[in-house]
Length: 368
Image (cartoon, rainbow, N blue to C red; front, side, top):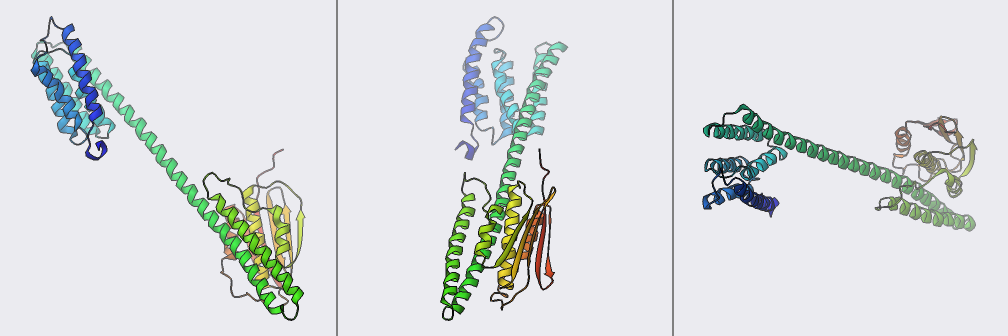
């Protein structure tokens, strides 16, 4: 309720109790020079806390009312000290709540009223005026420092939240790309093998059986990869790549193509490079199976000091392409985006009678 209506009941209660208790002590300590507390004095002591109750909604009016009650308390001849608490708290709140111009204006009015009262009672000592100025300035400087610290903390939290949202967005985009690659490869493979099985089921049952076995393996694989990708989205799940170059042999085996895999050199690779290289090979094999069935495919991985070269080439179709017109058209652009995201390049185009894809992915320097 306090946040909805702008009430500050707890702070008002604390200030009221503080002013009342301290006023009794101050009145007893100044009993020789100041007037004892009476009902009028008690009423003035409660004006400030009551105004503080709605200070959030009416900052200027309540500060002026608290300052007026403080001045009346002093003019009434009551003890110095406790009645300053309410105006001081309100000035502090004005600064920390962002109403700085209003706060400094009221600080000037407070100093003017206190100096005027001192001169009214015959205290024109310059040192006394400087002391009041110093006390009010110290209060305002402390309030400004608190405001700056709060604003900086809020800004850091905002930046941190924006960074978290940005990273979450990047993760979602990565996961979407992973899902696209997984589904595109495996569904295309399943479609090709299903078409082959249907075509050969009567003439060559054994080859049709092999195609159906490939479909079974590919469907199981796509379910497993999808589960791995989606697990990354779960809170607390390890952020690990769903596929790496250690699984290339398995990828080649289930592609249904005649593939020659060659590795030149070897070295540890960053996970993002491994994942990108694997997906580039996967997409290239998918394209070869879709557009160049019956071709021979060569996959070459060259591990250099500064870059990983991934080269996938086919010799061209030897049988009619079952799915040559059914692609999404996002395969090569998707591979190029993966390479570019790592600062690399990808070139794809006809080569001899077939097609070749070559990606160059930069690598960090090896540490000894």
